[in-house]
Length: 426
Image (cartoon, rainbow, N blue to C red; front, side, top):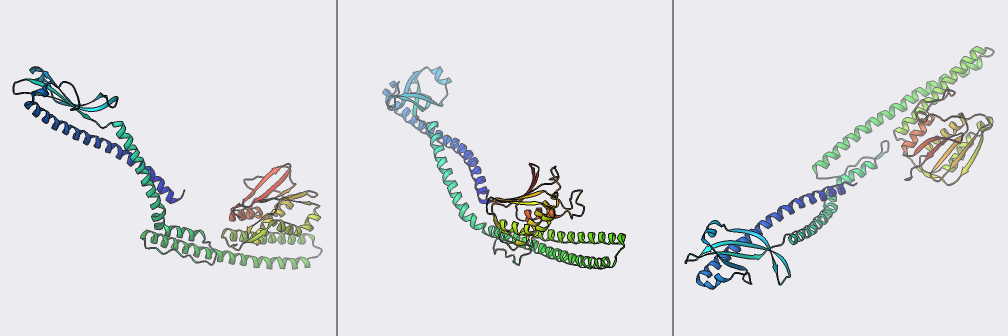
């Protein structure tokens, strides 16, 4: 969920809670004011009726409610002295409404100069609570809609404008890659917090770039320093081997030494390649045709396939293309094909299947599945492949992670199947 929508969600939930509390408080406060106003009106009406009754005795005979909304009845002195004035809600049948209506009634007592005591009841129309609640909820609903609509407009215009430096920084970071000749340009802003964030990010990137360059330089220097003496040592041993004729034991020792040095050379190259992949030094990309690349790399193994009598079959179900570094594509395919040959037996076969988003290389071999938890780790090799560096599939895994692709293994129908699936975004 985006930050602005996240803010709007919390704001909406908070407004529901706040408006609900406010509605309850407003309802009871308004009802209290309504009751105070009605009761004051009844008090004033009472004083007016008592004053009129003192001048017109006919009013004292009005015992039923009519359009004047009051009724008077005589009572004895004892009852009048015990009784107290009171306000209460009551319901009365209204003929013109043909229904019962909620009324506010004042019951009070007074006496005339002739020492006669009377009970006076005065009624007036009352605001119905149900109608008031319904009207209040209706008004609150529209108020909530108006507030949320306003918040949405503010959220998508004002806040988006305020947060623009943050999104620009995010875009800049997303396009930044170590090893590329691209400078980091943080957006200009007058907001102190955003400016501090830009400076902090710039300092972190500067430190990372420096470490990256040092690491890159060290790896290249170390690889070069190792590669040169290894090549010299192999060359001198080969010359010595040519001069050692007829001495089988010495020849065998020299051959073993050369073999180990060549393995060390391959190991050095593979480690350097892994380091370059993980440091994202293969930034140049182009549209790679994997169908064509697979066949081209397979041609390089033609003599080895013929020597071991391994049959190679092709199944092209679709055209497979993607944005890829060409050198890494060759390394990926070479390592997978070499793995299928090395772990095969003489007279076996290999089937390469290409689909719309993946290719699979299946091969015969040992009649049991491989250890999927270890086969893509560095320096893992089977017991019968002691001369291997154990880095071939680790390099494949690193390339897959570099492109957020998927590489996997399955053992189906007696065949070892390694597949490489391109991500959909490619």
